[in-house]
Structure formats: C-alpha cells, structure tokens
Image (cartoon, rainbow, N blue to C red):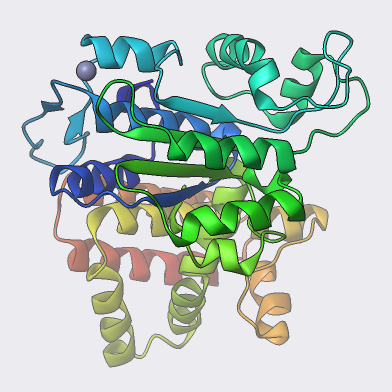
Length: 353
Ligand SMILES: [Zn+2]
C-alpha cells in the first residue's frame, strides 16, 4: 500500500512522512478512523514507508497540495509489504472459529492468508462485517483474545528477520478483550528497540485508558456524514456569529468577524464556505418541508428563527453569493474583500425571504 492509493488525508500523511524522515518514529501508534475512510490503508502505507529502501520525495506544489513523500513501491521491502508477506510484519485482527478452524486454540495467525486476500480484494477498505463474512464466521463476533496477545508479545521479542523494523499491526484494536489488552499493556510499557506497534481502530471509546495513554494517536479526517458533523463542530460557532451580524450589519463588528474568517487558511475558508452552503440547504429544507436542522448555535431561539429566513425566494441568491465567494477564494482573490462582498450579498438575500 502506498500513500498515493489513499483518497484524501493528505495533511495527516504529510505529517507522518515528515516525522519518519526526521527520525521521529513512535513505537506505539494508533490510527483512529473508519476502515472505509482508509485507516487500515494509512497504517499499511505508513509501515511500507518506514521500511522502503528508496523513499520518493516530491517537489512541493505551488498551492501546498499533494503528498510530500511516498514509498517507492518497487524495492524488495515495498514488494513484500504490498503483498503483506514481509517476514517482519505481524498481523492481528478480530477472529472467530470458522468451518475450517474450529478447535479451541485459534488466533489471527490461523487466518492470516484469508486476511491477506481480503485486504487485497478490498484494497484495504473492507469493513469488519465484510471481513467476518469473508472469513465465514456466520453470526459469531470476532475477538482479539489472549492467545493473540501472547503471540504479539512473543513476536515483539523476536529478532528482526530483515534487520529492519519489527512491525506489528492490530486491525480493529477495539475488539481486543480485556485480558488481551492487559497482556499488551506490558509490551507498551517497555517497547523493545526497533519495534513499531501499530493499532488501527474505528473507535477508542471502549478501549482501556491505559492503552490510549501509551499510544500516539493519529486521527483520520472523517468523510461523508461524519465530515458534516466534524465541520459543524469546527465552523458552527464562527458561522452562527457571522449570520447574526448579517442582520444587524454593524460595520465595525462585521469587519472584525470577516477579519477572523479571512485569517483561516485557504483550505479552511473553502471548508467554511462549503459548510455554509450545506447549512443553507438544510435551512431551506427545514423552512420548505419541515425537515430537521441543527445549526449547533447553542441558542434555541436562534436555531428556531434563522432557518425560517431561507426560503424559495432567496435560496438561489444565497447559493449564488456563496458560489461566487468560493470561486474567488479558489482563484486566490483577496479573502477579506471576497468575504465582505459575500456578507453584503447574503444580508441583501436574507431580507428577500
Ligand atoms: Zn520501496
């Protein structure tokens, strides 16, 4: 797996490769994010980058976009990592008895060839339920249990075959049972040199606090519906503040708010405007069809009042105003001027409800 195979997550990836290049490799890490959003892909690409013999560094693009570095994908280390056959890569994942392996003492190692095939077939994006179906465990829930943990500890005690990093990857680490987690803790307390323990988890809610505190967590940017919730968390206060000002139109306050918005990075300005577009769409669906909307303002009166301002009479004007501002920002226009113009256009549009 290479970083270029992953959709999005560029900033996260660039931070990771920079850390590796600067010799900052944390011995215990956790990638937190949905598998479908690329958390397993990211972990695999990271480990491949770690052991690649000819890392490739790209010229930074003018707009700051693009990956700064990636593994080569060609060297023997990369080839072994791509097929998940690297002798120093140890794979652990939730497992359960199957028609083929039904005796009591099974562990991840009994299913590793199925796991390799599954990852290859789904390009690392297959969910845990898809994995259970692939494995044929029927209605059983997979667990990472004591026997897995004992193998993890034993693997980390081995010498590296290839002389490089010893890598242990635990996919869906939240499926570890308590006994396994406690066993693993000992290893996390005193990691042996040259080892990297990489946990991949979709949620850390039920994970032992002692595990969480011992790993360095890399959080993936969520996609789709999650991205909306994350954007709301990040931008709702700023947006709500701005919307209030559009009614009052007190120039010095508005100018200060626009300054605040213009001080965001260009990508964030685009996210803010994208979030605003989506919010306006939801407000319109609320006023036109009664669908629920949550502005996240923390002010019930405002949350009830504002969506009524977006109607069939002005939704197009609002969309156009936001579209123009987005285009201006994309073209690198002066953000303050673009956002001030947008404020006037929005203010006018909202009065036409
Ligand atoms: Zn390579």
